Image (cartoon, rainbow, N blue to C red):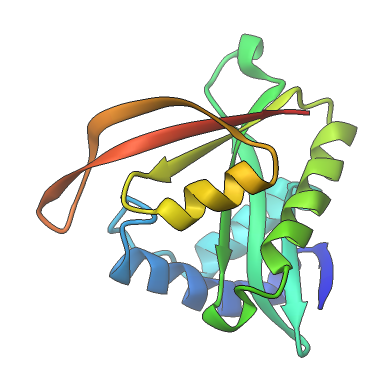
Length: 159
């Protein structure tokens, strides 16, 4: 397992992972599939704020951070996203990705990272709690996917 900044050539593998999450889970509330070009642009824009785990020579997941909200007052607060291929789960890849991402965030003077977690994703809540995130709010029925309303749990980690 290797953790490194994402590269343009990772976009194809990451698009497959992300679109599987979009199509088949409520981990994300979006139903809009991502294109390879979209991910290539995202990787180029975020730089080291987009980390990849490589398993057996192939990108098997990512973690990235991005603005929490617009405006200069929020510049040091970021939200993050993490997704892993099934074969990368349970082997420490998520922890390693988040550790690398937090290192880059600290270098970028980020004060806190936020996680927006589906209320239907208890393993996501457990994972974030295990790496030091604290649950700060539940926004009731703010997401809508698969014909049902879903809560959003907000968790924060001060760096």
